[in-house]
Image (cartoon, rainbow, N blue to C red; front, top):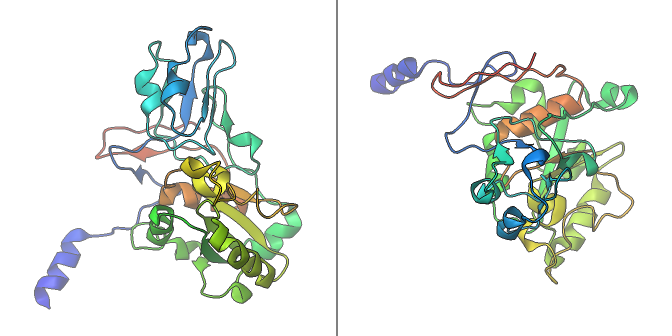
Length: 272
């Protein structure tokens, strides 16, 4: 027991200081794509050819990447002979609308907050029910990690609950398989209004690598017709800090465009 306590003391504070301090990201992390369309020649479509989800659309002055379909594999950046595509360390990927997920330049966009009425309802405490609609469990694992000691989602008053009847909204992962269609619809119906709908991960947003499959609905938008998604959180899977950033901006509890990233003290950026 003494050894355990001593080890815990040596470890010190493990919870990141976010949003007031730097964020620790793994070396292989790829965030917001930065594009330079002036480097994209008209005759080159190499980057589009290697994309497994058709998320890259090249063209002079029209280069764009759909981060809602992007798997952040980095194949397009490696294949681009002109260096028109690079992936930054910017974890701020969540957006309010599907169109905003399409990156067209080297300018970060930030998720807008809910209107004043909805912020009064959800701004102080948010309970979410997560539905895995045919996912591979990668997004589900990252959402679970958002509540661990390192990220501690609960310190912001945001928690996952077991029943939709106790929830303020749903977080959907996976491409919404045919076998999960009825379950998702019934879970949404059981969630009391007013309620939020959040799509987490490429599969839930666009179908990801399963888009076009006859046994999948291609994400939440394709199934719950007429139900607006309140927040899209891209990634394959999305990093816990991306989830945190999106939720806090949605609730109006995080403003400004500060970006503070450190990997063993090597990289730090501040957009402010």
